[in-house]
Length: 545
Image (cartoon, rainbow, N blue to C red; front, side, top):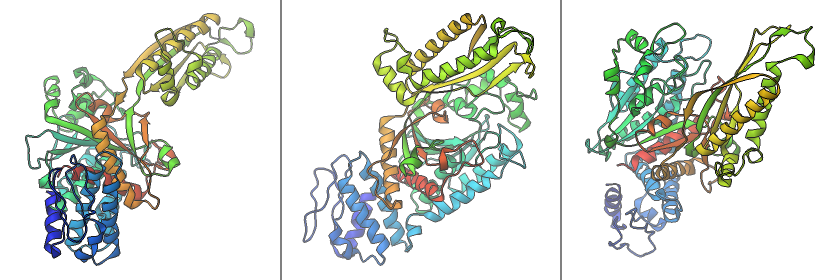
């Protein structure tokens, strides 16, 4: 469709054109035969820069974009790049022929940047607290946010509904409703004292891109259905159970989750019923999507780390999401008076916990110095850990927690993440073994509880290649310096894509955030980076037209 449109437009100007065709169709031109031809897999032949004057463009901005697209496609080293840039080129060309002459219109900044940023700020004001941003599962603010997002979905031309887990859906069937659907999403809930970009950015950029397609009259030409999902809960703040929204869609949420309660004694089922959503164990299982009906899942998310800012680029591709294990370590000793028990006679769990925490830091900084090559841990495993292993003690508590008392018990949490699941298990095994050695040496009792496990998720190579090409095509016209390539990153944070990977292939795009700060009011994304993310999704979606 795109190719025929371009060819017919160029032919109608003065008869100088290059045909769109596959590998068996020749290139036609008048006066020149250097037309750049993409390989047959992309099925596209483009006009050389010589013929710019025949189209009579009236402003230099579009001439630049046309030349840029022509040169980029002919030299594109990345798979699918020509498709992404040609998709952007068509949008630019149709915008120009419909009377838009300013660069911001050609790149749709009024929707992808101005309106998107305004909506992020508007959503960021929807909070259960007057003093900071907080939206937890099925709270009053969460319901208001869902209603607002649903209105924006309808503005983008989507049919909307709310499911029985509170997820907000917006869908367009495209040309072929029976085709497998592309799902795009992120979460509408937040942590306590949150930033306004985590989760919300992925929802709003998707809706902005679809709105552009609607305005351009291309939404109905999508080759497959596209569905945007604003997941009701990813952070797990209220019920200490992450991915409530996406896990139910993927079919991996245990029905027992309905009976988990918050600090006030309200269950998940009760919270939904308070908002007139009646759910039972039977219809929870019915919320699972049929894998045969889904093409893939794409998520745009802030990086929540400093890499993109360090390399000076707004977007980066995610190669995978790290596996995660959470432990709770309890160290028990003998409680006593701080002034009367001699140092050598103490069974102090605080000193033991301190030694264990420092051990964990050393183990995770230099795993190769601790892990043995005995068949359980190969050299390749320790090499992969060196680039992805992170370990954190985020919480520590003592009993009775008095300044003049030797504690009787110390409890701390351990969070271990890595892309290599086998390597992560090797670290856990080594740490657990050394915990018991140290506790035995200090005459302490130690208990290790495994509270959470999630395997690493690898993003789909084909879907990621398409998304990377779309992102690269978006970054180039918005950057002063042309990037050689886009960085490929590991996600140390969990995302809805982790749960959705149980349903379908997944891919993720990271967006630069200032200082790598997230889960904080200081979380910030530049307006132009919001724009770049929207342009990337627009190019990706346009490849489905």
